[in-house]
Image (cartoon, rainbow, N blue to C red):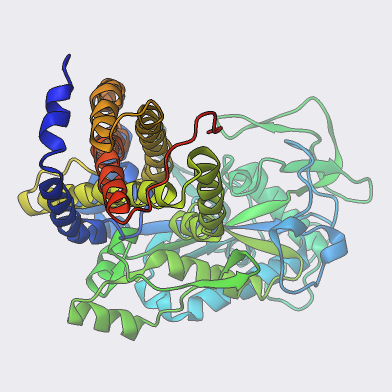
Length: 548
């Protein structure tokens, strides 16, 4: 628009109606604003790819396959053995691929460590969540496992002679039965004891590890961390591949053989839950559908996680009453906390789940930064404008810009959900919007008010100064805002739904900032100055006064 004076000529005489319109629209934005207060979850990224679509189909169409998730059991640094509670920082340093673990003897394959793992598995088997466990087959032993797959159970099955590794096997290529790959009835100088036998020793564990590693086609070694290795120990009676490397076919390649034992620094502990049944009984795997409850403790300006502990009956009641459901993320974290209380030689770490809890903890922990930012912004506005009323006017304009942006986003969410055409997916990108709008809004309002002040210094009337500010600065702000909006809307070409949504959200925010801080703020300044003039309290702008 080449001649923006026409816009000023309409806005200034009709400014009371403009103020009323701003008030009404702001009130209408409140329900939309409330819709944006729902928690943001990582599912909002809604990435589009064949792999993720396949995973979604597996979840929806083959929910009987369960929901598999797991923990990592990591050997502690020896100086922290027995300390309670365990901390992630206590995990022993990773020494490299195929380097093994020297302390304790055998690392995660140490007898005492396996007893500790067995205790954790027993705890999980007795946990109330066990009624949701599904069976799955062990790749190592071939035996069906109900709910909990752990290293101690693999040793128990193998050392009882129940593993498929110790039984004759059918060869599909030759259609003939073949001898068992290995056995647990000939242990050389040792007596073949069961895992639960009180007389079992580390030598028994070393021998069982050796036989499972050599005969499971890599399945046993893949259950361990990538630092797994056969480390040299001349006091051992076992001969193995020193520095051996596991290839894709499950074979171990090495140029050196010698006495030693298998070791590693960590292993899996895996659970398999009936996803469909849990969803039918009050649990949700989507953060945004979960009950919003406070699961954090304040530690100074930071927050630490204190998981919500739901009972199965409580979640069923939520489902029956139609209330927000129990989040499985809190379940995962509460179980991790329970397992950590049992840690002696290892540190139990939840792997791959609970990101929304951590993301929201970080966001809430940084809330105090908003207060600091507000103080800094107010101070800078004062240095630039040198009038309390200017600072208040700009502050109101910025606040309403944020309200309009969030309100429009919220209404977009509501309409999308109502009509099945969702274009806005709240994500972590959305957290950047307030900063963006504050930056643009402050620029627009400062340009407009400084031009108003300059015209006042030239001796022009209040109305004429406001007209010049809107007509000259308003046009420039319109051009910059338009190009910024178009730039953000370029995200609509992205295959990532969250990026497309961010482009729309940012465009709405920039438009709101232009209308309120670029056009409405000068009108408010005009009315305030007219009121001050009427009260004979208007202060003339001083020539030479410095404005940053």
